[in-house]
Length: 130
Image 1 (cartoon, rainbow, N blue to C red):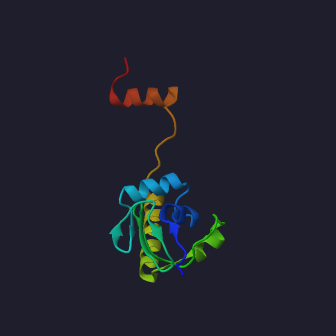
Image 2 (cartoon, one colour; image 1 turned 180 degrees about the vertical axis):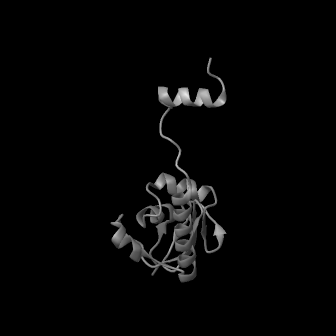
Image 3 (cartoon, rainbow, N blue to C red; image 1 turned 60 degrees about the vertical axis):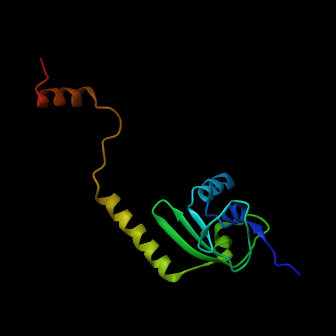
């Protein structure tokens, strides 16, 4: 008897790592997803116990596949489709916290173009007023 299999791109979509299968395919083709330590193709079949490394932006997941769902489920259920490496999880959470702190400390640019009053002040400051 053969073990159950599922396409890699479909599993990534069902486990909610990517919003669409197209995004999952682009990530796989771009080398952002490795199956058992090697680059792979979107149509490669995975089984329970497969190990995946997923890179999204500056974050990385090291996971082991626990379940092959028949359809996409809510995020609260999708987290049971895999088991994440604890050290990788802690590192990813630390990175998220660092990024949050950096965003909070960074000055925010003014939205939109300057008003007439702002333009006059800029011109008087730079010496471009007539």
